[in-house]
Length: 472
Picture 1: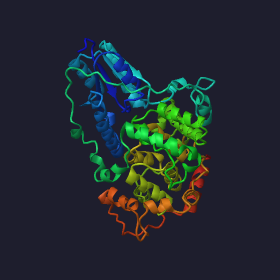
Picture 2: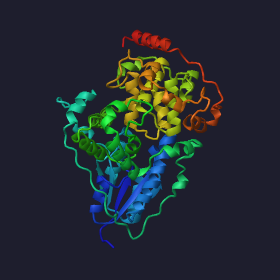
Picture 3: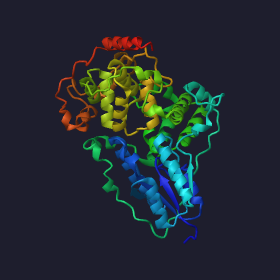
Picture 4: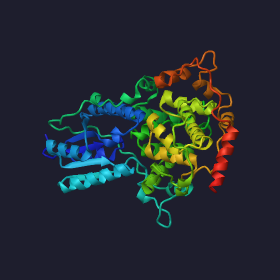
């Protein structure tokens, strides 16, 4: 028994034991630690795939906590009220958590911290989701960076704290507070039959994330700079799925990348840059939160985007545009819950430029379909492709999906992997698309492959004409 009051560890996107500053601080307090996850409005508002993946992550992390003599308490409700209830029930005197940086989470956390402190509770937040706190990276004039390369140059030689070890044990209270049953939350309900298709492609939890990082550093990082764009090859780390829920920390990835660079592995520098690209997305979201909902370049507010669910937009969502590279990438997402990064750029460019459709439609669709969904990276990626964001592709750069196909899938292995129509014996990956998609779409592998929804040269000319009329 301990006469030190318990500490409540409020978990969010930090589902790991290692390199967890808030967990480390909680264990060092000397008293019992009560890990809790709260199903509040932000969780309820998640799209189908991100919510389902979060539910899987919570189940896995609950088992990991049990291995340390602890358990995960689940509660549903408004965060402050839930925490106050737990403080009252357990006698806790501290509430600790890992910071998040989207505007809604920041407003919530600020209010929670102020209220708990007003109650006499020690309420503290910790880093861990990012390498660098956004307010610590400033230009020479004291403002926020708006271009990636100067941002990279500003942080690439910064000291990054080494990862913290996982606690050997987590002190438990004599009596645990009541917990909700995870099954009652029905986190995967909106996935419907797609869950069974995507589940084999999930790499769940901290141990899988560490294995993923280790295998990438041992076998792939040396050629990462070249192979990350080859669509049919497994040339990327695939860590975005685990980073999004904090099943691995960016610090762990950064130090692994540094070691690889010291060993002379050529692609390690590119890998480190990709980690900082993620940081840059959070830097922008923190300093200019409008990037989540509105055009980062405000002059684009006058652009006449299509914001309706047209037939062409629906065909884009279905992966039935008749443009092979676009459709293959969209189908990969339905089967695996992820999409090759090169594919994300191509499908986003096609929607926003060839179809002149608002990037928000694509942003929300990805937010429903991706298991590695991340608010900052998703927003910056869409605005980069549309031309309305920072470091954006210039308006006159309209990706040609056929040219991209020739360059990054010259033997068409990626195309055959994901598009069944036209193949005598399509692979299971291509057929799985028809098992994953909504039945109401009424599609089958016996359907013929559709004609293009728009001729690529026609779409490009129309986009350039629209941009020219607005003097972009």
